[in-house]
Image 1 (cartoon, one colour):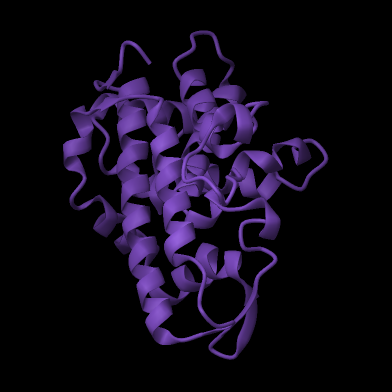
Image 2 (cartoon, helix red, strand yellow):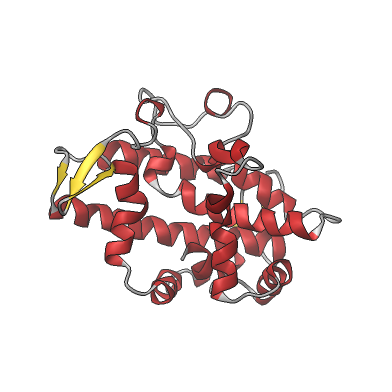
Length: 241
């Protein structure tokens, strides 16, 4: 949904650029690319990439610090800049460009999910067991998919809804350092709102959580469009980034 919402906010040059990379700009083609990093993460070839999907921040601090939290560059925060930069490189082979787009789309979505910028001691909520509507899940699953499947009936319609207010992103300037602020946003939400008071989640907490998820999906869509317009289209990358 994030990828297809972003496509609706691209300038024509960027849209053509994505179509050339993927072979098409159809929603199905974009979805396949954006979901690909999850599809391959447990294969022997890509098992190294698992840490790219998240970043852990200590509970005692509200701010991401690369040296402390991602010294090897293998985390969601640094991965966004890495793959955005790859899309600007001349001479990159077709497969690498396709993978760079796929990773960029996927990681921008991931960094906006609060528990992808959570805490090591509970593995971003994966070790927190909850019950919702009579079923047992872990908290990460609740935020990552359970509520989305409950509230989103039509993914195409949701993508259009997410893009509705984002057309101002077309000509925005992208600063690669902004990924640190996006990480801090998600970490703050994880700290303040991601954990229920009781293992049995009620409708009030679920509705509040969905409101946060919807806003984060919108932010992710706008920001992915901003990056793609900057690296493939008529937008700009901040010169001193």
